[in-house]
Image (cartoon, rainbow, N blue to C red):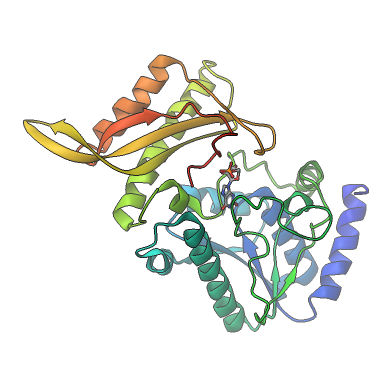
Length: 315
Ligand code: XMP
């Protein structure tokens, strides 16, 4: 990339050429799609409509965080509530790849509907170079189908526009700084969201459990970082397992669910090492999860596996 100024000038011309009419923009709250959305807004004004889909599979507080990020850089962003649609699409599905397919399909259908409503025939996405391998245009990561690239069926009437597809992450960061977009400052979060952190069937109740457990892990690890007890790990999260385990609630035996806590360091997510939290911090997480989800979660495990042989997410 040349300097950000030169890139922006060219990108605005490119967007003007590639979007003769109207477009919607798929915004995820991440840095790439925020930059793409801001460029589209700059180039096309009212002909561009940036959408953030509330799939109901997001982390606690995510919608507010993304709204604040957009407001902070002057991006007009619409939140589309779609939890019922996504939960419906996932009903009865346990296979991780099928979950990703259903979620990818639900995103595309929703974008097609919203585009239709807006009279748009283009979809701007924040795809960047590492989302692809350099030759052949194939998905780099074939171990899991990452829904955010290559997910639009050939017969869709939406044409994809990717203004950042030749950029690498550090270039996007430079561009974001130039455009006045604050660093989202959040750990990587998978596109299919909590659906891949609810191992087994995805129900509203299980998503709520995973959301609460993830929030507790984030709060406690963030507290540890702020107190100087640990360095910021690459990712830290909780996974709800499809296992029942006996616990005690008051005078009763209960069959609760099991949560696994995972903390990893990584440079590029291709490999990762598990991080062992200080014992008090790990115990606080376990204690809070079993107390705040009493009767629902009866056991908390700690995942010590590196990638490889495991992957970062459980699914
Ligand atoms: P894995 O689990 O493959 O994860 O070691 C590598 C990185 O990718 C994230 N991840 C995903 N991101 N869609 C995404 O956008 C997905 O389906 C997906 N699966 C995993 C994961 O959180 C990690 O940062």
